[in-house]
Length: 81
Image (cartoon, rainbow, N blue to C red; front, side, top):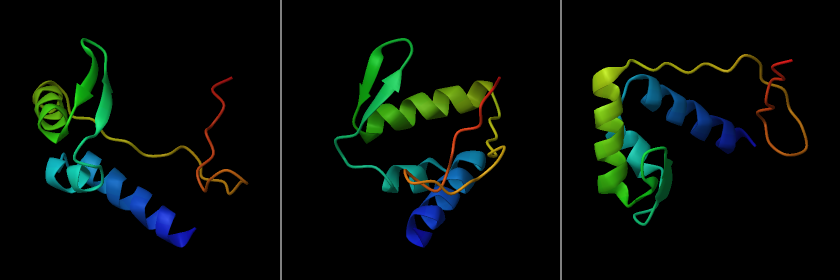
């Protein structure tokens, strides 16, 4: 479980610093990624292009509201209601 936590921390830090190289190391070469405008992105090149375009328009930053251990994973979604 510690390895999964470290992976999540690495991914979040890379996302927050807009480090596409690190993020793309975490996915397979044949990655399929959801995309609002086209349905799916296929492969690292398409994912990189989309992230680069998004990051040119916005400065995203992600921090979990709360972390709680559970049987499924070490991150539990926070209820919005």
